[in-house]
Length: 165
Image (tube, rainbow, N blue to C red; front, side, top):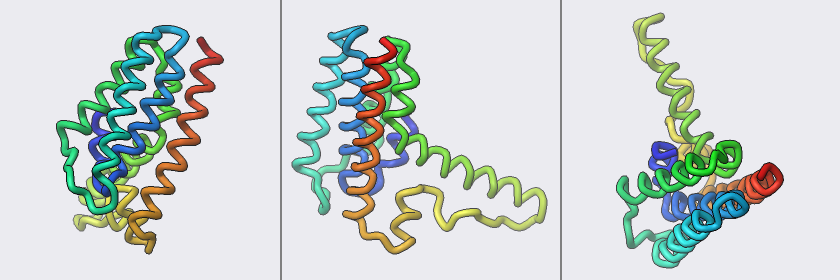
């Protein structure tokens, strides 16, 4: 989770919005098990929303590795404390997709190096959000679509967490 949030922190507001939605979804999922942890997650999600108020398209504040890794660690800690790993992976589907795209790219790059002695790439870039940008989508469209996907996944994760608790 820590690496996934760190990898997605490349576009203005992308990491802040998707992590806020994932934290709010996880807060609802862990609410029946540990209400105090749900308050923690909701307050961290609210902090991310406040961060987004100052960090829209032309970013004026940089989250960086320290902020993104701390937020990913908070998500992982919420899941580890309550045993809610399925809602974690559902609510963070955008981060999981980002990590898998990097893993596939690096694995393919290393495998072709040994087979054909030349380094070839499967994708033009490793990060999924940058691949969407290179395909012609504008930054606000990429960010908005990731928000929409993350919102749907967070609602689904909250439902899974409430049903399984």
